[in-house]
Length: 448
Image 1 (cartoon, one colour):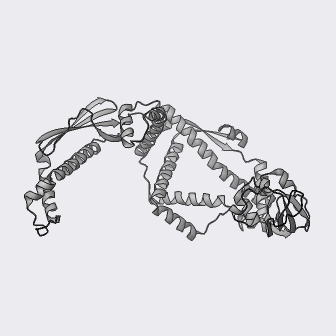
Image 2 (cartoon, one colour):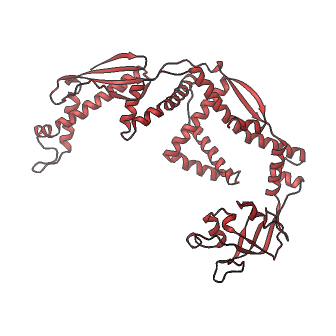
Image 3 (tube, helix red, strand yellow):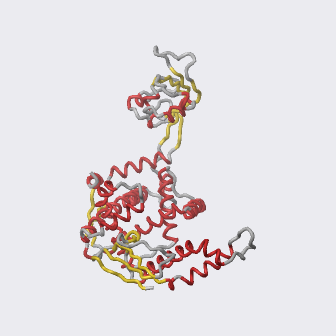
């Protein structure tokens, strides 16, 4: 079989495969013999159906299958051997004549190939800003406040603040402000005013005394969140649907978290046995905040690096007609008008994908299972941190990671994330960083 490449332009080529019967006849005969061994027909023992009958019944389909196998293997072998960077999938040329494999002794099949455009990329010639966010006194104060609350002790209080946990009995009121006969009531209910979404309702509990009562509107306090209301009133959601009445909360207990004292015991609880002085504690606080802010700096760098490299590469010429044809064939439900609208953005995404592929090839970047496991560990730690959980024991962390690695969908996401991280690390190492320290307020302006 002969394969011929015909260049249409820089991003379009046609592959012509000249095929003769001798190219696939042996494979067809072998498959017919194997089929005869498998076929069972009434009146014949298994494997004893006459060869002529098998050929008459299955010969054409087997021929089609073997020719298709030959075409696909020959085409993709040629693409791999000649290192053609094909976009999408090869498409049968529109001017190719139909072929009757049952009668044709020789024929030609033609495929249109969309080829990725060539471009130069000089990482070491790019300049990219890198913004470090300044750790402010306010950030430090808030972090210290949070740690003192976290490691403080819970004590009973006689007067409530918005941050306290308040327990008591709750009863529905009528329009006159009296406890409604047959209304909703619940004992040992709990309210946390700091989570109220209505400031007026929150203020009603500030300064409230133990064994006193507060009339408030739960629906307003929780912005009519049915889940929150059902939990407070100890009812099913369908039982409190439409409830907008005021309720009386009779306070039986106020729990106040007393902040930890700024002493050695607190410092070591917060940051370990090596942290024994206020000076060391404050240094740890600033180090922790800087570490948290670094993720913002890295994200901003990735945005700026992508913009700088896209600008350096410029607008690439893509095989628009071939790509649109492939995209429409791939998804029959795709709207042609919508595709025309989305196509420029899609080509921007494709340009960045080609840049990433070039960096991977030029730098010899490889991805290991350990890279993906590290990515999984990072994702788990971030998820746990959102729930206030840190320092997850290694055995539990390993269980989460193992589970993610076994899930094909999650594994694919880990692969993409880990590769993107390695690519960006290569970019950061190669480009010239223009470092600048900014305040959080200045940093946030970049995203407005």
